[in-house]
Length: 76
Image (tube, rainbow, N blue to C red):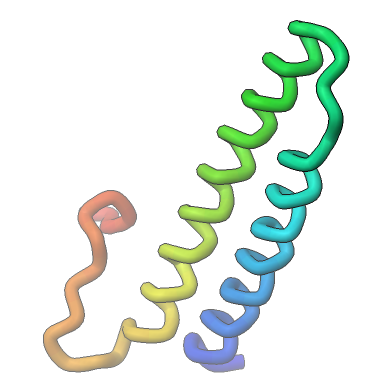
């Protein structure tokens, strides 16, 4: 499997997470505790989607000349 193929897989997973975000945001809220739990879940899902999308870009563009990986994900 090439990095480009892995990037496509990451993009697919980002779409799955995006769909999950949409489903969670449509859930009815009956109590304050449910509202807080839903907001926390949405915050975590958004962070996951952002990281997965970033990894997709890194994998897809890794071998392009001049491409610099975001410092958030670089090791050294």
